[in-house]
Length: 377
Picture 1 (cartoon, rainbow, N blue to C red):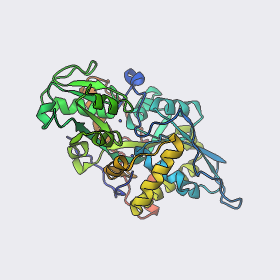
Picture 2 (cartoon, rainbow, N blue to C red):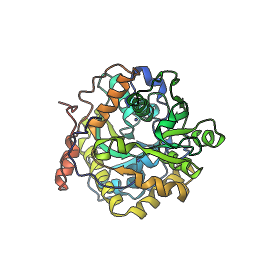
Picture 3 (cartoon, rainbow, N blue to C red):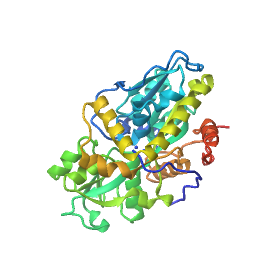
Picture 4 (cartoon, one colour):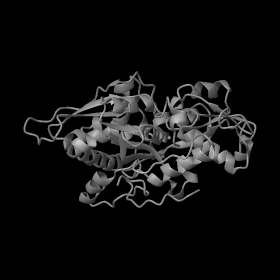
């Protein structure tokens, strides 16, 4: 597997897919994972207005979208604790939660959202579909948190997967493409469209996967947290952690994106949000237990249900919060999708603009991060 090629200082341990392009637009209905969330809605959190004497930026408000999932921990904790709002002065956060990447991209395209936390698949899809005109990836947010969990009575070794039924969240999403690539490297054959072959790849919504696992209709799943830990709590066993397959044990699961229009007109606001996310990741790292409780409290507020300790406790440390977008891993995931014949070769030139992030990191005494040659010129 190719090396990541990035240089950065990663903020360790906290709480978060391959490229999906025009022919996979319809297959991106669930790109974030975690709690059973309500419909897309304004988020009820601690995003409060600043004092009257707070510094004024170029916009009176910034509309921030994210999913009520652990993989979006930077947003959950940063908004819950007021760490992002603190950097915005008199600019008010208008948070909104989403269940799926396409609806968040649609909001960004439609002008009802300015900044979003989102997976690589819808990021690439939105960028390529608009011919590079509607968004930029401006920061990373989370890495890792993806595991192969199996029924230990049926599967004891990786070779035992042959002939079994293994779930992924959706055709063409990050986990699906990673699993198809892993199968290919084993020398096994699977049709990427139908999922039929030496292994039966069963595309199953993460909210349904635990029940399917308990009922025995699938033998395992290649899934993100906290779905993976839910399966373990139901008797499953972790056979493989995807981080073990990557150089440096890191790969992107959540990006921060921005509307190009908002970035052009309100760069000072975008920079302030990034100061907030960098400080949030730092706070998560320094306050593990508090951050985990904060994220779970946010999930309860947003979805009406917090994660049980037997799920969140093992899920939490397997996700890495990071300012680095791990750009080369996004390119690798895209190449895997091309290899699987799920997509045509995309033009990703210009998808990143890390200039403001690197400005914030430099001011904080942290190393700059790389766009892997995919930056805006």
